[in-house]
Image 1 (cartoon, rainbow, N blue to C red):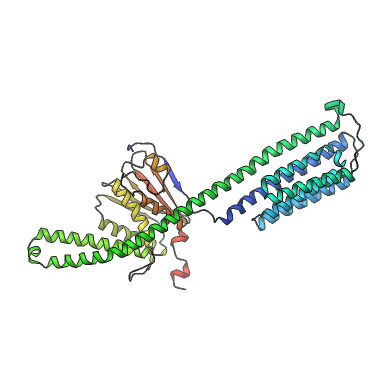
Image 2: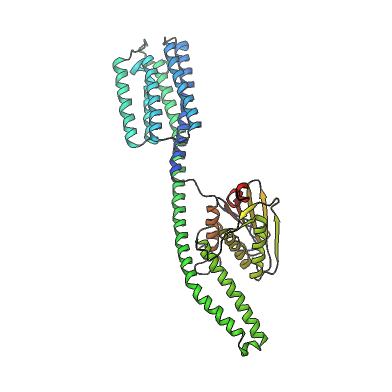
Length: 447
């Protein structure tokens, strides 16, 4: 990617909520839609009753109809209070809410003309909402109940004393009622079915993301098992090489040749690094080889990490800035250490001449920013940032370093951002919640 390409960004967010909470969140949103629809129904009924009773001079039992409206308002208020106390909503609760709406509508229709009331078509709104919101058995139950209610209105309802003037078209109050009912049905269906469908699509997208996350985590587990097995297997040959190099140092042919001794020293240094990598791999897998995590602080952890990383890498220029501020206690975490080293290694490979590490704190988050002067990320890499085997290095099996970084960050509840700088180079930012990496006051003092 050219150095001066316009900066773009890709972000991997913290781990989503467990699968069990997805349907709960969707149910909550759908119940909120029903509550909004009920408020609209209350206002609409007040306006309609007023227009019919006072505008068209059609006598209605106002006391009874307003009592039904008061009951609907009380039920809606109770629904709001219930959502604040217990936000999870099940299919049965949505079913019950729709049954209450059907009962209230039936009561109002019974008091205002029965089956001859043009607003009986509002039953179709309840059936449609049930078909979208409820399980199959609940939907068919709503269909049966609305049919029974309509039949009951036809049998027991008392028609209003309206003139038979349907032939007058829009001058007929009955035609006006049918027109208003149709417009109301259509508008509410478009508005609320669109919102509810959006909620369901969000749920489906969330489930798809969770399935993808589960597949990636399963892949990580398999990689961890392979790495642990490889580390075990490498222990013996590395020990053998260490013994051989130690013997070579005391052999006359090598002891009297400074250049060979220097090369043996370099080989032993790299061998010690290989042993440290093997030990860290086993430690990350929960198989510490005589080592254990110890208490430290964030600043000390970062300073030691940078010192060790610089001592084992061919770094030409490295700018390290620690602006964390007040130091906090933490446990030295090998996984966190490897995560930061992976990002630094990638940056060093892309930018051998210079790279920088900046540590900052913002409220309750801990941020590490790694900057380099390399070619930056290709657009395709940014578009699929964090996916395994997405690498610009052209090597088989590449792209796993950042993949592991992202999964460690997810495990800690953090996030990773990658972008290109307008002046050239790339920036990778790791953001972690302080609660995930620090010790509480009691833990810090061993209470």
